[in-house]
Image (cartoon, rainbow over all chains, first blue to last red; front, side, top):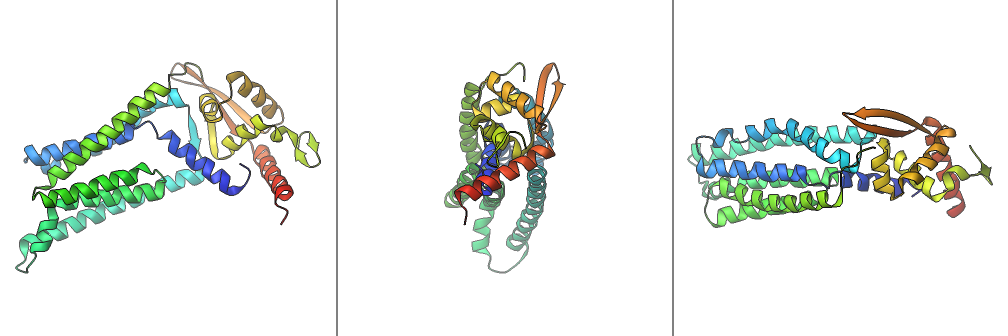
Length: 201
Length: 98
């Protein structure tokens, strides 16, 4: 515990542990289900479906804090960790803009040009799941939260299944959302079973 | 450095305090509940060790309220961080002199 490597591992383990409650995962899973449902059954709302999860992030963070902090305690991370978190958020935002640009570009290629883009066209329905999967993998890599790699894998497979079944993008997101929600619900139940509220801290 | 013995800071060298100091070293600040969960130490143990660390000016303590809940937050002082850095160098020098 005294050398730099051990201390870094200690900090990383503490950070991952602080997010082991599963509430953020549950939010991601439910958001995917909602977007999938909108895409599958509420086509008029599909374009706007992402707005609801986006505006729910801030209240979700506050609710999570009120539920989790009394159980696992309060920690203020180091300046280095907080800078890294800010960098991660910036990178994720940049990635979001990039996937939007790629999505629009591919959509344009497959609908507005006369070139033979059949192959590309078959990939389009999988793009939302795949791009979100790449985002999840990047998040896992940068943050060290390993289970995000599993979410990336779920999204990647869901994208593949969407193509295989010749379905629209909603199906992959809906199924991924259900799987992630089930994993998250298990984590949440386990977390609240392990930790009770500590009245005085 | 408090209670030096052959260059080893015995205040930090005690296993429970070493665990507490290491856990505080890797964060900016943490409360009692967090430290209790991370270290597995009892409340009484944490209190007594923190009092000793506070007396040596290795740790600063802030008592606040989060809503209606009292919160005791601990933070390693600059003195405490320097002492832990020196302790690490010393132990590393003993265990791995090359």
